[in-house]
Image (cartoon, rainbow, N blue to C red; front, side):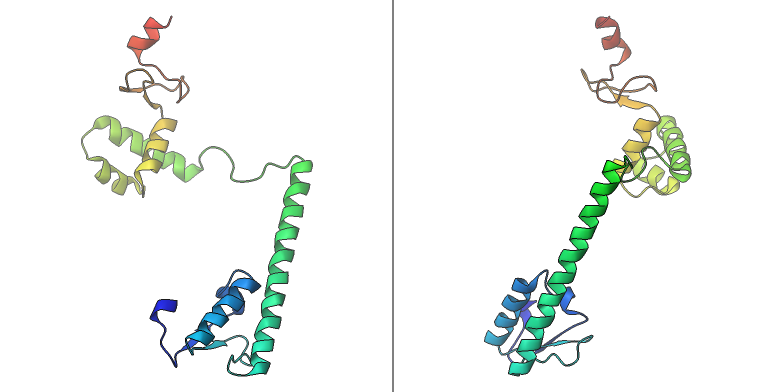
Amino acid sequence: MIFKLREGDTVIVWKLGRIAKNISNLLKLVDQFEKLCVKFKSMNDPFIDTTSAHGKFIITLFGAVAQLESDIIIERTTAGLKSARRRGIQLGRKKGLGKEAKQKAMFAASYYQENKLPIIDSMKLVGIESKPTLYKYLAIQGRKNCKDCGIVFWDTEQELETALCKKHLKKNK
């Protein structure tokens, strides 16, 4: 954005917190704007106008308040996460697939095993957006690559990382 600004332009933002991560970034931006003879205004803080000393003071003050608010949110989030961990609460997404994803995985595996459609067409038909997701679903349904030779085979019993095809499974016994 800075490279496109010209003398006399005005940068308008929705909130001060949207233009900079912290007070030092905000002040550096305002300083750059001054050097380029560019004005700065915030829609939610209409009294901020960098052409006056009062406006510069206000922008510094509100930048500091925005930084304080951000720091408080981080502190509270960190404290909440620590508290949850101490109480043994599992954080993050639950392991496994949801009902809809399980259905997509089943359809994807059946289309893949039939080998009648290109992978991209199978993905579109099932409603899968990316190849990594498709291969994750196929692995859940039992598609494995032999760790020794790389051949693709289907087995729901073996672990994904240590899977061996029948040929190498017999050798290792």
